[in-house]
Image (cartoon, rainbow, N blue to C red):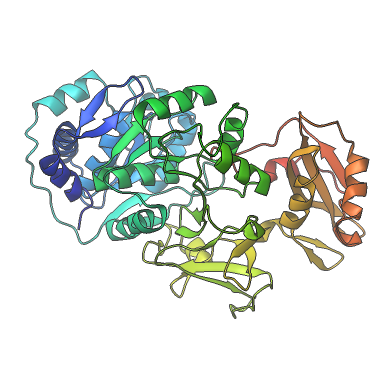
Length: 495
């Protein structure tokens, strides 16, 4: 199968329906989008791209990026996502590691001048002229479920990991979006995060596969501008990372009877669990249906906390999504009873099965049909999954396992704390000590580190109380809003 078949069908069955609406309001219909995909694929074929080749997408969040994704799929090649914000050296390293045959880049990108073994191509005027002049009805060689995307899961630091996700596996992920998140051909998905990231790329491709409309409004933007665009265009689904959701909370107004997003049927996020009060505020003021989606680039979706799940489980990441089986196991992969912390593993038809060119990493996380994301957690008696942190984040103090997520949760309940990150600090006496970084709430009375330590003493066992609380203006984060604890660890000296 080839996912791009659906684009050709949509161009026939709803030719005048908007496939893409750009930030300036201009519309690309399915007839136009379908032809563009075919023509781009034909140019790729003319330049020697064949099934199994790897093509980098080093483009901004525009119509061209969305065309490139399905054009590469049409050709049978694999998509290598690249962030146009990276330096030329970063792009050179990623393209080299994955052996990209071609990299599609912006006309002004310095990467075009890199001395690499691949073919860096500008999608500027000359490219567009070739696209317009080529016959779109090219016959492409068939391939048996080739790799669709090598979705980088470790950014540009260390050895890059590229889970090989096939067309069939991507379709299985679309089924999760259809069944558990409710995507359909009637949707207007508001693309408000970079297309380089797996979530936004997948949701946009799913919308186009179904025949819906992608509304392009990529960052940077002010929360008020995003809200105005969403309401003007009638957006029905919006994905944002928790960092951006918290920025929305700065907007005034909204109520259960008159939410700020007037047409939105679902607001959803991944990356981190919101505080219970933040989740409640989002549903009261912005959209009555908010969903927290837990999963990863490598494994796809795992579980979802729905808007109508009880408040008592608001700190969880919900129950398994469509087609997913979820488990928590011990060190020898034996399932643990409810309430006990262990290693999370899950599987469904959309889970990748290996990393490109990395057999050792593949053996660590893909085993016996299961995917091990490296997270620790527990499942309650109702089947809700709670996260306890990363395996690599676990603190071992005096031989006792301590889970940072528990301490972070307690600190987050203090009115003077806006955000927090807890991690281990090397210790001569105990192996590790507990350090907490906090961002104070601007709306509350300032609180000192010693006061927060005293607060923790009243909420936690003595061995879980942080030895030090460090106040910072902000926490370092990745592009999808995850706290970069490795950066914080560099600030800690052994004690």
